[in-house]
Amino acid sequence: MAMYICPQDGTRIETTALTWCCPVCRGPWDLDFAVTDPLPLNSLAERVNSLWRYEEALPLAAPTTSLGEGRTPLVPLTGTVSAKLDFLMPTLSFKDRGAVMLVELARRLSPERVVADSSGNAGTAVAAYCARASLPCTVYVPEGTSPKKTEQIRAHGAQLEIVPGDREATALAARTAADTPGTFYASHVFNPYFLHGTKTYVYELWEDLGGRLPDALAVPVGNGTLLLGAALATAELHALGLIEERPALIAVQAEAVSPLAAAFRADADALLDAPAGAAAPTLAEGIAIPRPPRARAVLAAVRESGGTFLTVTEDQIRAAQLDLAARGFYVETTGVACWAAVGGWTDRSVVVPLCGAGLKTGLAD
Image 1: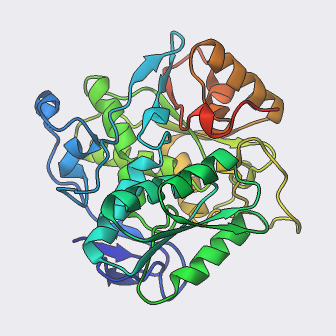
Image 2 (image 1 turned 45 degrees about the vertical axis):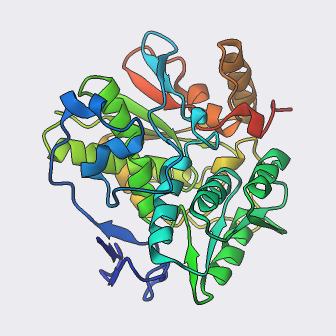
């Protein structure tokens, strides 16, 4: 197996350990893993029809927990904007890409329990894959999480813990539980295996576009797991000589909760000091993260790609959800943020992810 490595202080540890964060700085892990063999584009169609077809690029192989995740359709919306339909995943969100990696790792380590925290979709995905792997699972969610999402978590047999307060309070509760011996913390933020799952989003684009990528990738950003996965994939494809240029990463946040956009506009390398008090409410609950632990990495990735941050208002989110529905796509409110931000672009090609199904939240009020 690869090694965990702390990007801040260089601390290293075997991935067989259940240590969920750097013991020195308590920050998230990166993974010391390199892709060395180019993917054979012309023969990929002969492989398994899931994200596991990109085995050369993944730190785990031969999974037993797969639900057939990945290989979602790419559909044009305008002459320059296309959508990748990740709401067609087994649990109806893109989080399956990373959750299957986390749970496959957990299955191999045989912990006493698996713990996750989420605003809904990641917790649902972890619960489903834990059910597939016969692993006991507890999912922490903040009060106010969509009832459809909590229902889905319970349906998969996970224990649900509803935490008073916001997303940060929920994360703190889960991390306290994660410190209990014998616990695997299936954190989509702290564990880098999740990022190596989300990077398959870009590998699929590369395959479907015949060995190239669009000019830009627009990505909704809360904790930044899809964006960081995209950055990993584009770096790997470029290093292997499989693409000539890396696309610009366009990070989209809800205007109501946009700490990374504020830091980017201030030319800061890390989050700015936030005012005291709870975060403002937003329809985009999946990206309402006031203090993302990988903020530095997200900001650096966007800048390195030549990208930028965009924010969208609540009215724009409402309008975008209805507009996509009128085009045949019923998408949850978080998942429409990128369409709201770049749907009118005509000067360059861009792909937006439709990350979660509308059945998870319903129509915005």
